[in-house]
Length: 426
Image (cartoon, rainbow, N blue to C red; front, top):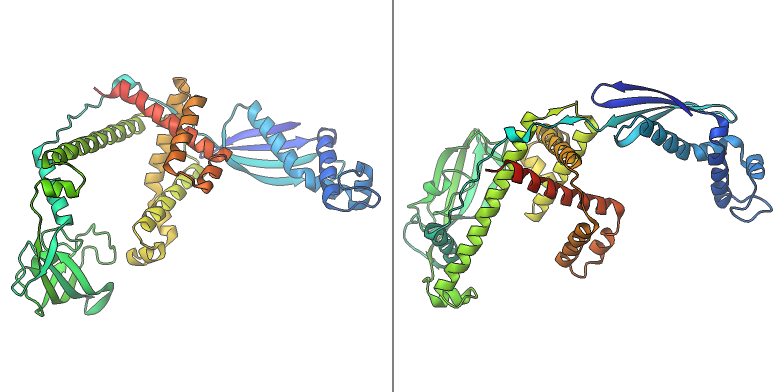
């Protein structure tokens, strides 16, 4: 086998590979066996016909075409290994010459793993912030727990800021109804921030059956892009007003939540809130580390396949998040007036950042011999099994090589982050 090799722009490489007939003879023999297993060769059991008989009945070109994939894969791997390159994804292969008894020639263009030059870790310092959780945070959580157990009582008087109202609502842009802006039984808790800024304030003081028309300007960064930054007209009718009655925070209240006393409940909440705050601080530190590592590292051009892979991951993460919230992707795209292609385009900056973070993690692991031991991988897999007891689909997936590789990468990334935090956090 011989080849010509050159590097292209955007971290790509091109190979023109030539294989002589004697070099792919064994590939032809294996291909002939596979063909004879699928095609009936008169006088022979499946897979037992000699090469010459398969050649006579099916033609040598047919055998060569059957062998082509294995020849290309084997020789491309040999060429890449010789050049000490790491490729990403499948190469784009174009056959230049394919004829029995002749040299086989093909061109393969592949994306390369970009080289990343890491900064000196001594130049990166991130201060750890103290985690402070006290009576204020515990009290706010208790208030939320009270609200979850509130009783609603019909009220005849005007709504106050502490009440709940049910309204029939219509929204208009330039006197045209807003798509999805009609709600015949819309609930609004007047003490809470509403997804339509200013709506709750407009409802305070209204009584059952009262009508009101008003105009609100939506924030420019509102998630509903078709009305973001625009003035929207509202027509509402109050259908009901409810007073919200909250339980006393006493031992009875605590026992209803599975705790022996208010003191025990507060102790539990303090522990949970502290862990949550610590996790939030850990996440902030990790984000800050990656931000500075990305900023101070040097990267070769990122190949499109690497960025596109991250875009696809981000899209499916969005889709899964919407499904968990009971939302449909098609409806979401209609609401924000965008196509899937536009969403993918919006993901470009974030995808490039994620790709760079992955490259940094890989390089840190390589430079510092950070590896995942079999015991660590086995333990991670066991933890996943415990999270999905009796789920046969999960158990089956955990045996797939690509799933195991993904889990191993996750564990390695975690070890890399731990290493960087030891070196950087002060």
